[in-house]
Structures are given as C-alpha cells and as structure tokens.
Length: 159
Ligand SMILES: [Cu+2]
Image (cartoon, rainbow, N blue to C red):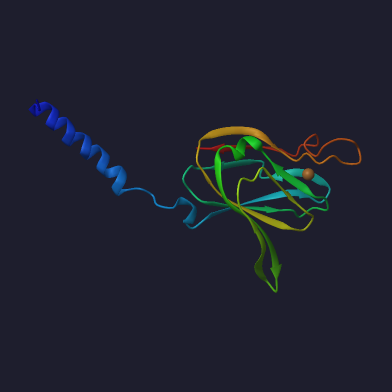
C-alpha cells in the first residue's frame, strides 16, 4: 500500500538526485589547465623550487617540470600518484621561441626524470585529497648520497 508519506519520500529523493545529474562536470581532464612550474635543481644545488605544492581535486593541472641545472633530476612521489588521474606527460622543447611537443605518454605514471636544461609537463586531475611528504629525487651523486639526502625533497597537499 502506498502512503502519502512514502510518495512524498520518493519525490524528495528524486529532487535530491536531480541536481547531481544536471550539474555533472563532464570530462574533467579536458578543462583549460592551471599551470604550475617546479624547478628541478639549480646549478650547484639539489632542491625543488618551490618545495611545497598545493592542488585542488577536480581541476586540471599542467605541472611544468623544468630542469635548469647541470644534473638530471627525478620528480618522484608514489603517494602523489595515488591521488591523481594522469591525462598525459609531455616532453616539450623551445624551438624558434615556440614550445614544441616532442612526445606524449599516457597511462599510469609513477615518476618523471628530466635531463639538464629540459622540460616535461605532467597533466593530471587530482581525484583524492591528502598530504604527502615523499616527494624526492633519488639520484645518487659521486659522494654516495642521494639528491634527497642533500635536501631535494618536498611536500604535496591536495585539498
Ligand atoms: Cu636530483
């Protein structure tokens, strides 16, 4: 037997469901990207600049990993990769003053290594919130210590 109360509950439930359908965000990986640049190392110094990164869930980011130093460097944070959806990683190069894409990689990416003077772009959408502190460069130098041991570490917050 259908009571007035249960009919009302059904109508209320339909009203609650309707907005989530009407306002679905569509393909979040196809937004205009928010550009964030991180420098991997500086001549004579192993560090991420900045070493604290902040992102928001649901937005598309183009994380530009620029290596202005004389050593190769990694951008490694396995915990970070668990909080994001990667659209692509691109290798880009400046040619005649214009940025040219040399290659694109798709699928789950765990870490990116950028060679001296080069640039890679990591396009991703954060899907979960969290604070991770395992950003590091694990390259071991001639002194037997990793760049992380020299301070090339960082923190990523996703809100
Ligand atoms: Cu390094």
